View 1 (tube, helix red, strand yellow):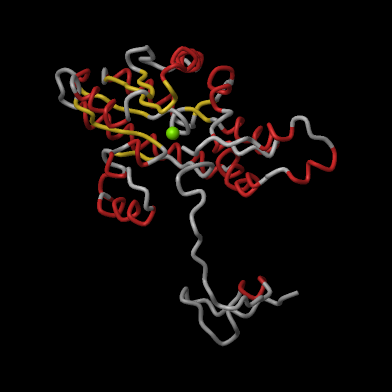
View 2: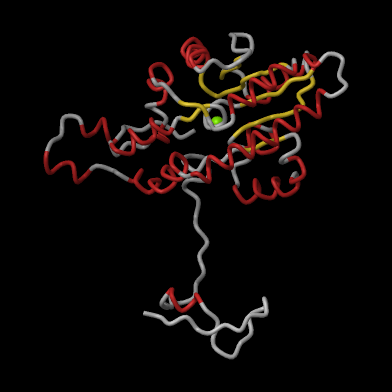
Length: 274
Ligand SMILES: [Mg+2]
């Protein structure tokens, strides 16, 4: 989370006209990321892919188990089960940094998020197997009532004050709490701290190294969802190619120069350019 600061939107109230040019609208740098998260069919496909893997893993886990309720699947909520992008778009349009987190609580109380693609079918299937479902989210515990109302409005299974574990205790502590009575066989989330405290390190480089060291867990016990809109990486330095830019007509890439045989065996000629 980021420390709350005086918001651009709040600063704007009381200002008019020319003062608007002084508003910090740095949130617009996430415009493409939010479009990708909210609108792209590719994100839909990744979400379905994640839930397809999760379904396979649940089925494997419960096969031959006398008491599936002794097992648990643990899911994060935001950007794993529910889609909060309408809030992000609203804040983007108001030049407000949603990653200052000062607009989320209102959304949690009064917003109507939609479901992440594949979430409902997965959760209903998991529920039918008899496995325990636990929702662990860093929404704060004083928002439990509204969070339960949202999840019930979406008609999700096993939603109760006992099964939806909010902040307060850290996520590792809440996972330990679930483990007292269940074997956690699967964790689903959009950030690495949804899986293990191994990832609770500041350095993104080190975090990427820990991901590589634990690569076999992804798609097995850990199912990760795409979230391009926010995360600890969003102020990271970018690493670019330092060669001088060279500009060429895109159309020249469409063909193979005459006299060169394409690997597929067909003799090709250069496609004329504009
Ligand atoms: Mg999340």
